[in-house]
Length: 328
Image (cartoon, rainbow, N blue to C red; front, side, top):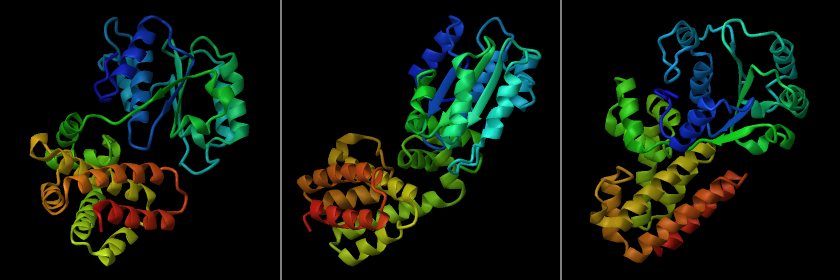
């Protein structure tokens, strides 16, 4: 397959290319990953490849089928997406899909149904789609995108191949973003991708809406508060994260990168965090043992941030744990 718009995840690309070329592509594919990671992009790439008429690598992006797919007007590619709230993918949409799926394709060999945010289906909607997944027409392919496979019924998963997406290399992603968006520099894109763990969509959005600037400034203030042994300033900084869990996770990710760079020291070469001043301050004012503890603590806090439901308790834990790790 020709994945010109979907970066990284090389093993998944190889898997899909093999399944497509060997005629072993399943009727149902679940693509899981966080928002902005590229689920919809991959789904559209796969849909285009299925309707493409080229004899060589597909999608060719030149034939009439590919042109229609790219413009979103191909009569055999159907895309539905929920806004993201719980139970917002209504069973009526699923019934519409079921009523259509048994009609033969209009132009292509396949009919492709992209169901975005399928995790927003309630149990009734998932059971409805399960009926067609059990005995689908030979020409039908369903691509479901979800935040996590755990949000789908086991019966749906048992009839699907699940692909789990991960972030891209920061250098590769930064080159892509800076070339696609004229107003975003390579350096800003690189820093954002490090903070958002290779998530291209989230990184580009964070720069556009100014969130990345806030995140880097906040991470810098936290580092200053740690090295200055200023408990009040640390509490003040972390309290700003009380309403946005994703922002909190991103700040912790950036802090972990700073501590990693400080642990590695001058031998590390290119800074993973991109925050030279913060790394220098941490390295000069704390012992190597304390810096290593900070890195391990940031890793533990990140794990906790993905599990805790209460932000207030998590912020308290962050303040206490970072001060303790620094030996304050």
